[in-house]
Length: 434
Ligand SMILES: NC(=O)c1ccc[n+]([C@@H]2O[C@H](COP(=O)([O-])OP(=O)(O)OC[C@H]3O[C@@H](n4cnc5c(N)ncnc54)[C@H](O)[C@@H]3O)[C@@H](O)[C@H]2O)c1
Image 1 (cartoon, rainbow, N blue to C red):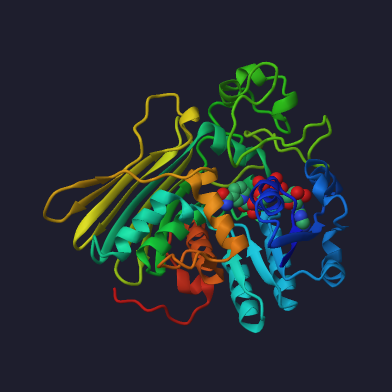
Image 2 (cartoon, rainbow, N blue to C red):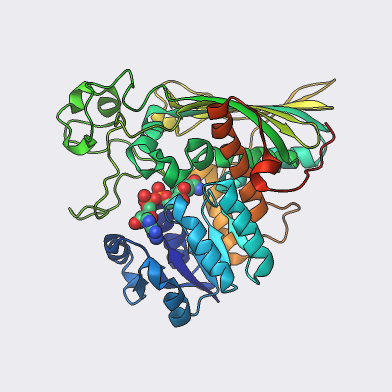
């Protein structure tokens, strides 16, 4: 029996871990303790899942007490990003297995601490990179492993975040680098991990440009230069294009998204104490970037050309992976209900260097992130699928490399200098054949 304590009763924790453990994996798993800095979150959790009524609740300074009283073997970490490090290190010190949300931590220094602590612990660290489990992403991994495109030489990845999803980061704690590492860490950790995993090479050096173009005090669509507004109570709602596009005049959210919910509460109580997830996207405190382009060099010769933009008319990505024997291409338009134009079905195109093109129609699954979330939940709560032929569940090293690339991106954009991953992760030398 897996005995689980959950640190951080976030929206993500409720939907991704607590709900499936209670409803789908209850024969093998039990939640024995809940911890959050905010009592309202603990209360909300019990209102949503009465099955947890008798589970004891704790504050951050009671972590060790929680462990001794509830005797867990697994710690799920799903709190605000900058607080992950604390629970990962304290859990490893007590030889517990850690399952942490991405990003594992918010900077490379903390990632090094996690890797060092794991070597001294009987516990292990798993990072829940659910994008790997998307059926298209698994298919691409399988095509590369099968040698369809040979040795990988370059990757083009352009990620587009729409005005709804992009703005959501600038309304919440995610907009502060001290809390999230900035979006090249908080969000792009998914993308850098995917590339690192697909091509099975280690990143060596990053160069990037970054800018704040849409949000913050100079955002061109800011109705007026004021500070400290909140969408729900803003007098300028109808003058704000972001507000009017995604909300109606009764102030109810018209959009449903599997991983951004502004509210989960059925009652009229706020969902958080002393914090609102609808702060104005034009607030003056915003200084992280919303636009990046980056180049990454890898240890076995691949180059990545990456871009991300957090305020676009639709959401999705374009990907091409080139190798010595061929090329893989795909494009995705996320959440068809949110894209206001006709969109093509996602397929994967395979072009051998010489020969005929093949188009692959991937079998999709039900559930969040293209059907990836239920599959990672099975690996986490039933054990890794023994029939799968390749490694997919990520550990601390994968968490660290994805964060180091993300930190390299924002640091390079500030310094106008290339950043070496070995310097960030304090590894003496990374094997390089370039
Ligand atoms: N894999 C994915 O696709 C995905 C999607 C969404 C969020 N996430 C990750 O899940 C985590 C939660 O994100 P969210 O947007 O659902 O968060 P949220 O804003 O809903 O909740 C954050 C929670 O952290 C708690 N918290 C703050 N400081 C704390 C501390 N010191 N100790 C314990 N708890 C503390 C808050 O009280 C709150 O309950 C983040 O790490 C985020 O990056 C991952």
